[in-house]
Amino acid sequence: MSDHEPDHNPHVAHHYETEKQQFESGKLGMWVFLVTEILLFGGLFCWYAIYRANHPEVFIYASRYLDKVLGGINTIILICSSLTMAWAVRAAQMGNNKLVVRMILVTLLCACGFLGIKAVEYNHKLNAGLTPGRHYAPRHEEQAGADPAVVDPASAAGDANPPVAPPDDDKSLIAPAARGPEGLNLGEEKAQGEQVPDNVALFFSIYWVMTGLHGLHVLAGMGVMIWLLLRAKRGEFGPHNFLAVDCGALYWHVVDLVWIFLFPLLYLID
Amino acid sequence: MTTAGSSDAHLSHVHIVPPKVLLAVWGALLALTVVTVAVTTVDLGEFNLVVALLIATVKATLVALYFMHLRWDRPFNGVIFLIAIVTTFLFITIALLDSKEYQPTLDEGQAPGLVK
Image (tube, chains in turn orange, brown):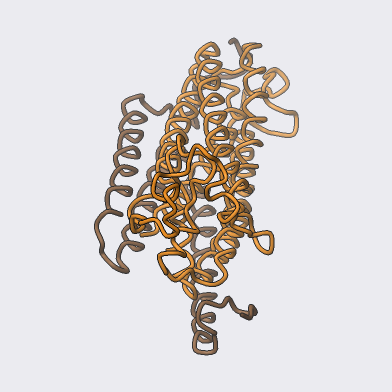
């Protein structure tokens, strides 16, 4: 490599000796950044672990208000987006910028789908008052029977205490969409005499902060992808210049990694 | 792309993951997701959490090794990543041990510092 002249390689910045050195420095920097991300989320997982260890009943009770199906779909969406992002790196390494554009577009689409489903979930929780900390105020009383369409025959006939199916541990308590906004039957459960643990709000504090921070990372990742998309459209990437796609993909995979742990820990308790 | 002054020697750091490997890892991740959901229908008591965490760890390892390229990367990058994981693990474990010490002083259902 003694005959190498950095000035003649448009992809190597002047303060690097070789292309390889530039590549490895960039990668190292990215990994150090990813470490700070792991530590950031590590603090939140520690928060989760301490409260779950001390108050398992809160987690068992409250996690039933999360929709396992929506959470599962989001998990699959993120796994697929990780695949397309890894494929984009492959395409960039081979200089196939058209494929890079396509792969990043699919990844972006997945990210939109993830956030869309997240928005549905958040909206549902906001409407039900399942908000964090001292804002936690499950609104079941004023919703029960408020909508004439959801008054069932038993209560219409004057039955003050209509028979309610006992809550099924395996099923999410979120009602099918057709039943409308009163879906969360917290009130019915109370009528059944089930013990509602104290401080259920704890779970929702953890839920909102952890999924919220993760959601912000998804947004940031989408920003990175748009930047990569524009560069790929200009045909910039190739075997000598794919570090940006590589690092963007690494970031996206960390977003996926965090969700891989968040999904079972928040949605799949009992 | 023509790049003056570069030869194949400069590309020694480039490893392209074969599509077969990418698809296999993707399939494994999807399968493990199904397993982790399915296993919640079986009541294993405390082991449900252990199984869920084990599956998540296997999935994370697959992502890190293949999608994140660590298997072919310079080992140094992997070492840095591992140090972060181990540090986080120690952090959580020691915090849990400490927290458990105070368990008897808790009011049932109350978070530390919260009162009825």
